[in-house]
Amino acid sequence: MTKQKTNFDVNGKVVLISGAARGIGLDCARSLAQAGAKIMLADILDELGKDVARSICEQGREAAFCTLDVTREEDWQRGIAATLEAFGGLDVLINNAGIEIAKPLLQMSVEEWRRMHSINVEGVFLGTKHALAAMTSEGREGRGGSIINLSSVAGLVGVPGFAGYCASKGAVRLFSKAVAAEFGAMNIRVNSVHPGVTRTEMGDKAVQDVANLIFGGDFEQGLNFIKSSTPLGRIGETSDVVAAVHFLASDAACYITGTELVVDGGISAV
Ligand SMILES: NC(=O)c1ccc[n+]([C@@H]2O[C@H](COP(=O)([O-])OP(=O)(O)OC[C@H]3O[C@@H](n4cnc5c(N)ncnc54)[C@H](O)[C@@H]3O)[C@@H](O)[C@H]2O)c1
Image 1 (tube, rainbow, N blue to C red):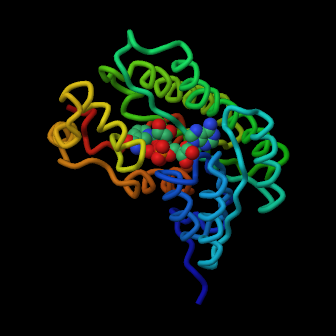
Image 2 (cartoon, rainbow, N blue to C red):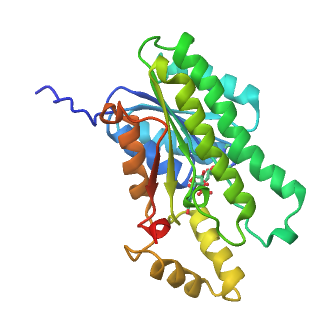
C-alpha cells in the first residue's frame, strides 16, 4: 500500500542537525528519521554522534554523522558538502547546538561571554550562511528550504543570572527574522523555536543554576519553582520541542516564516 503523503510529512527531506549527539538535537534526529527524513547529524561529540547515526541506520532509516564545530566555518563547508554528497540536497537545517553559562553578571568574564556568543550566535550565522548557499544554488534550486533556529524563552524575556545567554538567544530570534525577510523570495523559510526548561543535560544545568542563584543550590527547590511558575505545571520534554521542529520542517508550515514558536508550557505568558 502506498503511504498517503500529508502536509506534515517530512518523508524524503534531507535534514542537517547541529548538536545532534544528545538532548533536543538527538531526539529531533531520531524522530525525523523515524518519519522518513534523511538525517545528517553534526556534533563535536564524535563517538556519541556516530553511535546515534549507526542506531538509526540499524532501524532501517537513513542517517550519517559528520564532526562539526559550529564555530568553525570550514567545518560547516565540509558538513554541508558531505550532506549534499550523501543525500543529494539539503531541505532543512536545524541550528540546535548551543551552550548555557549562567552566573551573576558581575562574575561573568569576557571570555565566557565570547564563548557563548561564538557558539550560540556565530554558529547560527555560519550554519545559516552555508545552508542558504546550498539551498539556493548547489542544492535543489527552486525547491526552497526551512531553517529552524533553537532560541529559548530566554530569547524573549529577561532572566536574572542569564544575561549573556539571554543576549545570545535574543540575537538568534532577530537574526532569524532578518534572514526570513531576505530569503523569502527564494522560498526559504527561517523560524526560531523557543523552549522553556527542557529535560536534557542543559536543562538540568539550568535548573541547578536557578537553584544556585535563588535557593542556595537545592535542585528540587529550583525544579519546583520552575514548575510552579509554569501554567502547564511541568518542565518540557524533548518530544515537546521536536513536535514544533517537525511542524516547521514540514510543508504544513509553508506559509510560516520569520516567526517565533514558543514551547514553554506558558511560562513566558505569565
Ligand atoms: N534544554 C533546555 O532547557 C533548553 C531550553 C531552551 C533552549 N534550549 C536550546 O536548545 C538547544 C539544544 O539544547 P539541549 O538542551 O539539547 O543541550 P545539550 O547540552 O543537552 O546538547 C547540546 C549539544 O550541542 C553540542 N554542541 C555544543 N557546542 C557545540 C559546538 N561548538 N559545535 C557543535 N556542537 C556543539 C553538544 O555536544 C551537545 O550534543 C540549545 O541551543 C539550547 O540553548 C535548551
